[in-house]
Length: 130
Image (cartoon, rainbow, N blue to C red; front, side, top):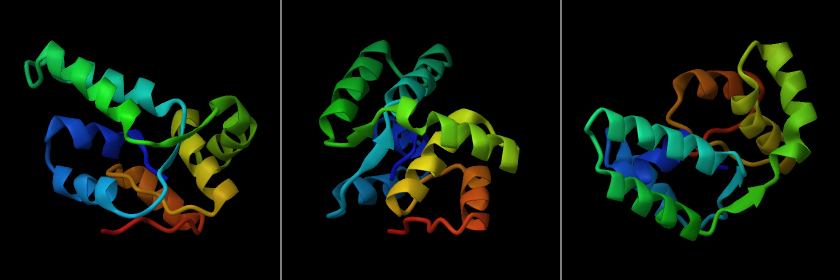
């Protein structure tokens, strides 16, 4: 299960992008809520605004992200569980979509978000390591 923090690294060549690259090359099925492309696009947009990325790079990143072969799960299917988790662990619902998908599928979480990683660990969700 991959989150937006890793997907952003794939096509923005930021710190830690080598770890994300190993995931995209690993022989594992990639799962994510269908919110991921929206979150990634927003992060890349911020990079464009700061002059860290060209607008054409953002468009190319979106095309590449959608071509990776991620199995998308509709966020609506995860929303009730994610909202309950958000209340329980006091963390935003959009991040809890990833945690809900991990628990539903028994998947390991690939994230560069340390706060999300800690919460996942407390829930017994394993972290993907290259």
